[in-house]
Image (tube, rainbow, N blue to C red; front, side, top):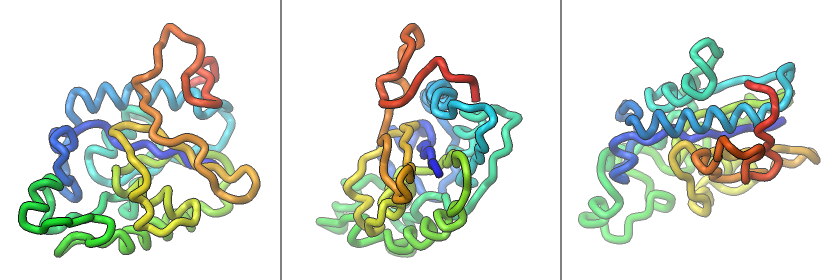
Length: 215
């Protein structure tokens, strides 16, 4: 089993570092460009055209837009509400600095969000999604959000949801989780697709060959 994780491209709020949970923002022009770069990388990440590939996305607009740009308008993309972003509750739309003005020392991983979710609650959603992938052959391409993907990565490799804090993740970044020896491991993390130079034959990320067939 292989899981390719792709964070959505940039939005106005992500550029401003505002917590964007259920607010349904579209991609900016930059976000669309980032998604196009991710599409070129994904062609190399799925090396066999006959390999089973399933595409999943958060139902939020920024994630679905990214998925359509990356996979193509004709691709089957399954919307899964378990992949929606952390519900930030009263902190929706605020920056960390703004939250800490009224709540000094606040940490989302430890403290959660009033009238929203805790990391552990997000972890329960992620665990359910990961369980649905058990036994699947081929590649699952998952489009989602910054905090959600960090929790998913932590839970996939046996860490607690709160330990998602050890990961950083940029917009449109690509990560890979595999289980080549029966135990999940992180093969690639936070790869910036814009680093690819189309004039070169290969990507800088390990194991990615730009000469592979198109997906």
